[in-house]
Image (cartoon, rainbow, N blue to C red; front, side):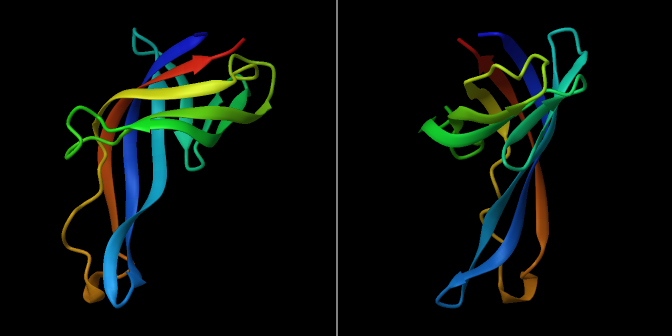
Length: 136
């Protein structure tokens, strides 16, 4: 592991028609800031997922290699292991080959409230997670 950071942000969901006149909340992706153990900003996370640092290095999570329910799976987004790809720059993320999201809190989309009259409504759900970055 070359880097560990605490992520704080939101998971965004939109109410969409899902077929057979049913409606459901659909995940649109995260937006989060990542911090070291002393609270210094290290990186940001956006939909994709894609992590980037202030120094200009970035990495995308291109394939979910593994996923497991969080211990409180009715409240927290899953723990995920991504294969890294499309790395750019020369900073800390440029050599990353995999990224792990663990110790998640919150972030699950709403269960109710997505109906025909609410189509297009956006819900932003706060979450935290630990992100670990691995390189050879």
